[in-house]
Length: 466
Length: 98
Image 1 (cartoon, each protein chain N blue to C red):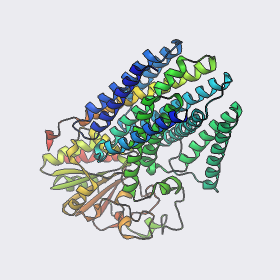
Image 2: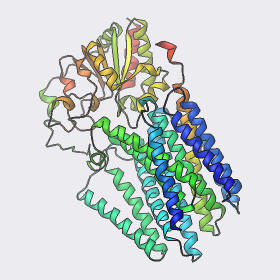
Image 3: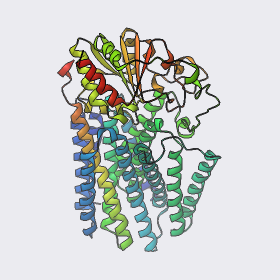
Image 4: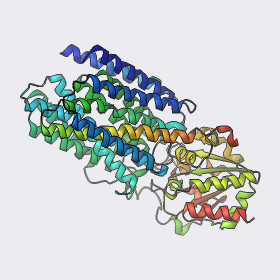
């Protein structure tokens, strides 16, 4: 590759770094995204000009088809479906890396070339990481889209089986690297890596998705970097490493927000069907022997309309019901009557990092109203009403007080400290962790059962009629 | 040959550290755009896809390359566009009602 091409790749890497830097602050983020896109365009054009490309047919067709599909997806996706969208795009990135490495392997072995050991190692790593990313992301997509159960699927000897699978993949890959480049062994590596990707994500429950998605994001970067080793391209290595690092940072933030280690998220099977049914006292029987107070729509409307300080706590239930626009309308009405409305955002509320922020932004709620956990927690004591919409585990006081709870130690929103709490919920089913929530039985808590969108819509009507 | 590998490794490790340093203290509002933006950057695999497709000398190689180009372009175009769409929602002037 000529030196000038390498300089262009360097320039594109610089654009990526500046772009990522700018994505870190709200004011500069849009320009950051544009810089990164410009870097990508530069990298693509450089490759087309200097890449010694012999046949153009497939390339032009591929670019046109891929860009078309990507543009349509980006334009039509609902904001509530962003987690699945990110998972899917991640999967495609990982898949592309794996395919590039596979194509190099096939070319080398068909030509009877002796693939150099350093390239051979990179090919195996690229294929393995890429295939795990692809299969894992597709499963994550299926879970988020509701095609696969979002519960953690567990089976006997799970960890041992997954470990054995990983070992088998590595041994086979090592055998290919040190011995001859056999296509059948290579096919086996690809197949086993795909199975590994499926199995390692299928055992992780829905509420742990923020961690999984950021981790897969990191993998897709690492796969691209490995592909860079395969074809000896600096641009790929730098961009891939940047993405790998940013994914790891987000993963760490998410794990910290749940006070759990990455290993615990990946292998803990948190939120399996019977989430430690024995350990958690009275998941099923709780409703029977403890009383919850229900509140009527009209009473809830009166309480909200005349409250001075209202804190809304959104969770995944709000996303599922697509209630964000109704929530905004309600908040506007409350503010028109003289109240102040803020939103308390738990870092792992929803199914991906920042999920709630995206949803509420779609409904035109200005982002200064969205408060982080640390910022809002001292304010709950002074809140007249806290309205919990489709959130559960992140407001469970057991995380604070009950040392034997699986949630114990997770930082939570101190909703229970407000003067009054209204919980909007579909039913009394326990949250994702399968743990009963003491908040619901508190004296200052009232339950309002039903679909979040319908209920909030009805509250809006009721406030208007006051 | 081994020197070449080491040079690439140096670049890789240093770039990882740059990544860690560049992305510290991201406000939660931007977690999703950062993720989808960096996700779009991982579509850099498009470079590899273009190169292997362009020099493929067998039908099977060309088809694999074609699929790789399609996937990577979906990743790139979809990723940057959807990130832009999200950020345009955040842009609405914060002073609007605070």
